[in-house]
Length: 137
Image 1: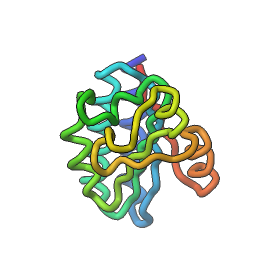
Image 2: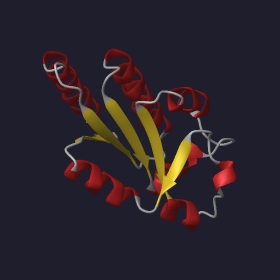
Image 3: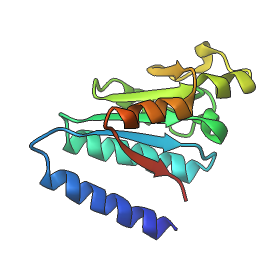
């Protein structure tokens, strides 16, 4: 499955490279507690935001991935905080997931913001023409 995901991402990168006359907008969906998936998702946003500085990228984190945004538990806290400083990169976490696990806003990595519902956030982005990438194994 990982090979398939890498192939899909390679095709996506090639498509974007050929069509960069117009900036793109991509939303990344992260629900996995798997640290490898989380690190891979961060690498994808790092590479794409560097290669396509006029494009917009948003990572939506919810479900089992909630610890990814907790400052003292995240395996990608440093990378996420650095990327969050980029005006074209946005990290959002589902408030419902935070509520379910009793996580307070003060516990989040700097630059991460909460949205009422992660799935709804993705649906709204897609309705606005954003491309969609599901990060996972």
